[in-house]
Length: 407
Image (cartoon, rainbow, N blue to C red; front, side, top):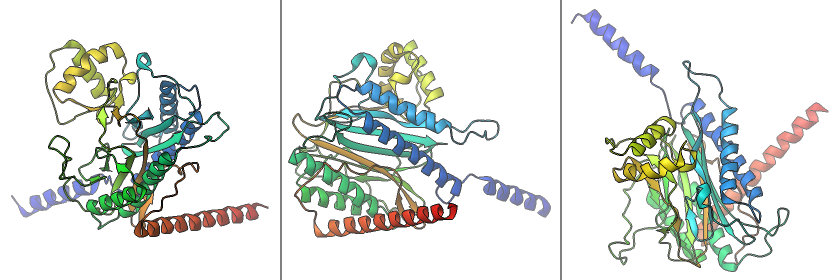
């Protein structure tokens, strides 16, 4: 090969490298897409909170949230890229889990539970993506007596577990920073749980998120494995990992007044995700039809059976797909009867300026506790509160200045 040909080859390789798409937060367009997805998630959550009143049906709430996310997402980034529309919409189906159900409850129309009633504890979980860049959130509330009233009272134990879960989420979000390790976060969550006398739900984990990847390789456990557990109950120890700049994480915290060892219930699993690494030639016609539709409509992110074109056919075809690991199940998880559960989740971006929380609503102010966090946790919570107050003051001053300029 001549020197000229070598140079041409080298130039072509450099050009190819330059054209490679940057899909992390070092790309400002990517950062914008995460933030826009986050706004939609927060909007949908706020709407759902207002819809959680006595008599509301769970399936109606799920569909309301789905409509908000999809309709708002379709309004953004409408310009086509290379002749193709930008993919956007649901990143995780809207789930509404009541009382001892912890998460992943998104029922079929034929398997609806009884409507909400005053005093029910509701956990809402959902996700949105713009061009594969995902934002997720979860929120816990108590159904009030009526739409315009706050819950009459909440048990002390519920206050303890709700405040613990919310504060653990805030502290964990602060701990997820470039250079820190996942074990630092686990220790912080356990410290909060111990202070409030509750138990982290061991099967819930925090995950790194990437483009079209909801559950990334880097994970954070809510509690360390207990060597006293029997072999069947023993939680696996997660590999240690270090957080890096430009990463994105789902900070997922669920706490219980019970033992924290949730179990799949008797309800049908309706939320699934395609396992893109697995291939198998299915034998059953219904299974092949379901998989073909999933590959076309939901190739990478979770979906609910309700949004397949033929639910009856899906119910027939799903088992073979699961058996051969083509689909991953997200079963409805239950805590033991009588245990109180709270679930909060937010999305954080590890920006050059620091970790920024972009999703999640404030904890309802009717959740109260007499228990106090430990000194280290209290210091972090105070810092967070002071930063939020400064941010609110700057925003108010900016708004006042803008208003003065118009007059």
